[in-house]
Length: 179
Image (tube, rainbow, N blue to C red):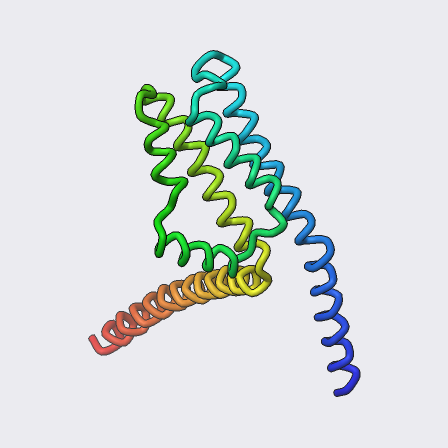
């Protein structure tokens, strides 16, 4: 029993080490790369003359993207919740400012800026979730349980079909024997 406990401890410790030193670093790099890609797309949109590099909405979106890249390692679920409470209390300065800056832009330009901001927010939420080991474990556990549930449902359906066919044959044969 103690060998099993030692093995379990070593597997847990190794998994935690891999998560702490490799997985988190990979997630940070992947997050930054995705934000770089979003920023590059915004830059190309402006380089094609679709929006001015000097427009305040472009500058604000670019600054937001640069800040997301720069402070990525500081992002955490706890910090996000604390910031959310503060912004609820005092209002979001960014949200009101960007709405003002979007006035005067075409619908296409507004859509591009909003897609950039929404894409960054969505990717940030995924990144924060991926950083938290409890969320990752819960996600994969839920995925595994859904797989088990679907597997059990499939087996159940097969058994129902077999039972139905067997029962139908038995009832038919029983009735045929009596006549």
